[in-house]
Image 1 (cartoon, rainbow, N blue to C red):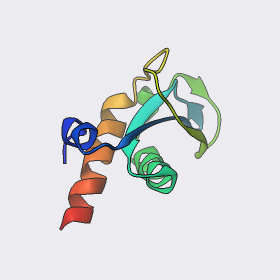
Image 2: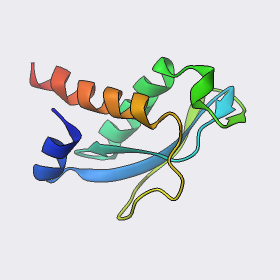
Image 3: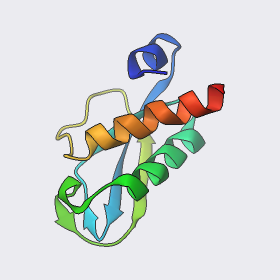
Image 4: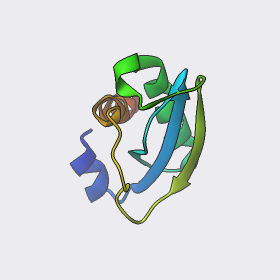
Length: 94
């Protein structure tokens, strides 16, 4: 399912920060609920390479909140997070 399809189905936007030896800027996912959002970000954190991060730190999802507006600064990791977001719901539909 694409992000546009998720938006059309009323999924909520969540933003969060992923930390994995280095920290991303803010990334966004579209999810049915907070648990799905956290799972998607955790899955994405496993897929990310060092070039997707802006600051050095350690691996874990730092926080996730429902968001009504666009992130102020999109992370280099956003494309990987979007792929994981779409794959998460494609796999749930199967």
